[in-house]
Image (cartoon, rainbow, N blue to C red; front, side):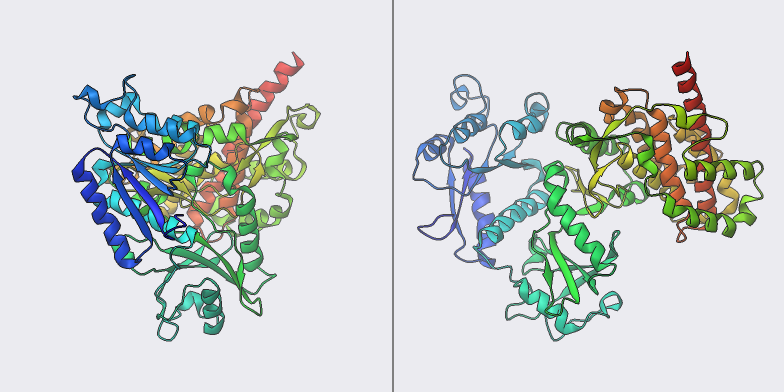
Length: 574
C-alpha cells in the first residue's frame, strides 16, 4: 500500500491511449463508492520498465497487457522478439523487494493459442494472479477486474466491508427462524458488516454435509459488479450441524491451499460465534456468475467442446486435479483396496433396512436374492466365499488428498464466455483412497442427473434400462445414446449428462495415471463405484426406483470385480 498517501497504488500498463481512458473510467467508478482509496496510474511500457527498476516506487497491483503495442511495428517489440509484457514480468521477478502482484489484460486470442501458455506463466511467475481477455470487456471482464480490485482493497484495510444490512427491518426466513435476531446481529457486528446502515440478507438455504445455513451478505454497489460475501452459520455448538461446520472450517484451513489455487474459492481463517456460543460460522468469498456443473449439464444448451474445455480445465491441464492427485500423496500412508470400505461397518444396518423397505420392488427382479447375500458377506468380511480373497497379498498405494464429497453441485462453472471450474464445500477434505473423488462424481451424475426434472426420474419401469446404462459405465465404456431405446426428446434432455459421464469414464486412467501405472488397479476403481452406489441405495431422500437402480449397480460392480479378482489370483498363482 502507498504509505505516503495511504492509498492502494494500481498501475495499468498498455501503449494504447484508449485503453488508458477506459481504465480511468473503471477506477473512477470504484472511487465513487470508496473515495480516496486508490492511487491510479496509466503508463506506457517504456515508463513501466523504469518504474519497476525504481526501488522507491511501491506498487500494489499491476494490470499488464501481454503483447504491448501492435506487432506490425517492430520497434514496439523488444529486440529479442519477446512480448513486451514478458519483459516486464522478467524485470518484476528480479526485484529485490517483493514482486508486484500482476493481472494480465490481453487480447489477440487466436495468436495466443500457440504462444501464450498461461499455466506455464503462473508456474514460473507465482505473483501473476489472473488473466482477463479484452474480448470479455466491458461487462464480464469489468466485473471480474472490479472484484479483484475490491477484494484487494478489503484485504489491505483501505475500505471497511460496509455491507447494507438492516438490523430492524430484515426478515428472518424459515431456515434461520431458529436463530435469535440478537445473535445474528452480534456475529454481523463482529464481521464489521453492519455499520450505521440497515442490513439486507439474501438467504441461500442449507448447504453441504454440515447442513449449515448459507447467507449472502450484499455489499453497497453490488448491482454494479461488487462481489458479495457468503456467511455460513450453524446453531447449537457441540452438536450437528455446528460440530460438522467447525470440522469443515478446520479442514479448509488445513488443506485448501494444497488444492490448485485456480480451482478453489477463498475461505477466511476467522471463526465467529455469538457470546453464548450458540451460533457459529465463518465467511468465504462468493463465486460470481457461476452455476453448478449439475445445472450446466442438466439445464444448459451448449456444444460439446465447452463441456470438454471445462473438464480439461478441472482435471487434465497443468496445475489441475491430475497433477494434484499425483503430487499430494501421503507416502507414509499406504493402503490396499480395503480402505474404500473403512467406514462401512456402521452402514450395514442402513443397507439391511433399505433392502427390507424396498424388497417388494427388489423381489420382482430375478436373480438378486443370492447376489444380495454375497454382497453383504463381502461388506462384512471383505472376502468372497468362492474366492480366497483374503489370502492374496494386495499391493498398497499411497493415500492422496481428496475433496471427499466431489459431486456435481460442489463444482461450479464460472463465467459466460471464458468458462472456468471452481470447487466448493470443503467439509470432507482429507487423505483418502485415490479413486474417491472421480467415482463420487460419476455416480452422482448418473443417479441424479439422468432424467432430472422429468417424470422418468420417478418411473419404476425405468429400472431395467438404467441398469443397462450403469453396466456400461462400470465396464469402463462410453454410453451410446443412439443405442438406448428412448425417444428423441428424452435423448436430447440427457445428452449433456451422458457426455459428461462418458468424458470422465474415458479419461479415468489418464487422470489417475500415477495409480494405474503402479499395477492393474481397475478393480479398485470399480469397488469405489460400488461404495458410492450403495450410499445412493440407503439415501432415503431418493425415489424408490433410483435406490433400487443403485443397488443393482452395486451388484454389477460386485460381479465385475469378482471376475477381475479371479483373473488376478490366477495370474498370481501361475
